[in-house]
Image 1 (spheres, protein in one colour):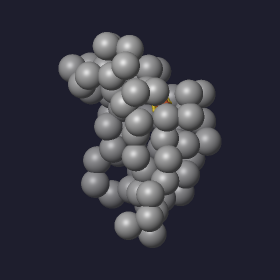
Image 2: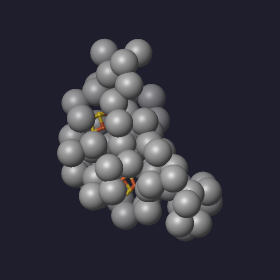
Image 3: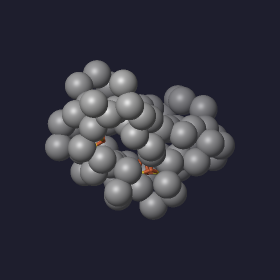
Length: 67
Ligand code: SF4
Ligand code: SF4
């Protein structure tokens, strides 16, 4: 089983991953620190490891980690 992890140093909070996630468990936290200083994506419980978010991320900020 895999779960998605966000690299806060790469995320620009564009929201593409949140729109694409079939489980709708990715949200954009506007207060979270990131390299760009304007929010960051966050993954909640329930990830099924499908990888859709990682495919659509234009900044390669999402990786799948085995759990
Ligand atoms: S698609 Fe990538 S850059 Fe955009 S919010 Fe998601 S993780 Fe961040
Ligand atoms: S791997 Fe799939 S279920 Fe998990 S956060 Fe990404 S799009 Fe959503």
